[in-house]
Length: 397
Image 1 (cartoon, rainbow, N blue to C red):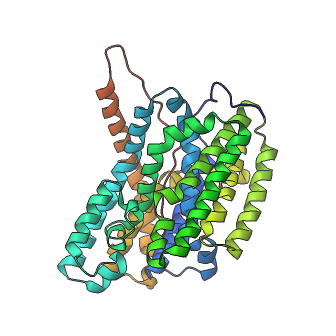
Image 2: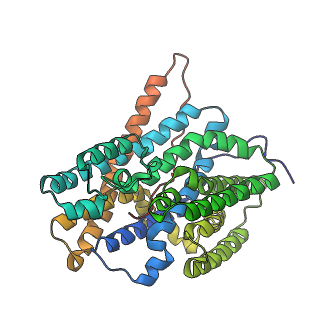
Image 3: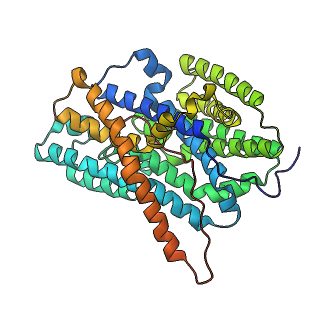
């Protein structure tokens, strides 16, 4: 088996189809949440197949590893780790804080009106309400909430941000993981990815067997260590993709075959659900699907490359972080299933506005600030702005 190329293949470029599928993943999370909250009614069969949106989490974690490798392999391999961390902070933190701001009127309404039923239903709060809210807010500001498997800490404010906490941990490890995995022969790379996946399965089985469901659920779905193997699978798929591109073997026919097989197996696993949690068997198939889509220049006859879908995919991070606060505000305002489509449409439109007018300008401004601070008299390293980026949602609350 050949070693990895001494010089990594060029990163960058727009894998537009992978941006588009982020929208479908984020929207499935929205549908799961809005159904659980009573704003809309989605067919039970659909929710079963997507595991009420939880399957989207696995896709986002795998896709994150893939896109970060595709975009930042050269940056990290040349030692510019600080530039990578600064770019990730600029990417995730502004919208994370905006999501928290949208939660402020919800929290004020619930506490001022002593709405015990909703405090319990939405935030799992019954005792020590103000202390729990303060601790939860601090954890979310520090992006540490996924490390605390307690509903009273994990769920208040914008509870879905636990996946962002997982991603922050992945980002921390990414330079080490990338350097380690890119040094492996392809056979050993496959064994490393398979080993991480098997270890995840054994850990999940241990949690499910020896801990009560009230505790194991958080540790299985939200603990960053539990979800790390999905991120590793994405890195491995990207390394394979770049090798195929560099050796001129990244053919459309190969991509179609990989996509077809992975979709068939994903459908079978998603419907039959032979093991729980469903994402465990899905994650390697998702990695194969992402690899296959990357190998096809214009998958689904170019549908996934359409500008509207790409825009919605770019806005999916904002959609994910604002949709639950908007749902809570809608319920407080008296919306129910008869008008539940209104907050759905509002969330979609607002996510695009946020992406265009807040997320992207703030990302550029923060990166420019870091670049200005790092500027040296002889000139500093200017990080190339990634065209494609990975997004992060989480399990439904």
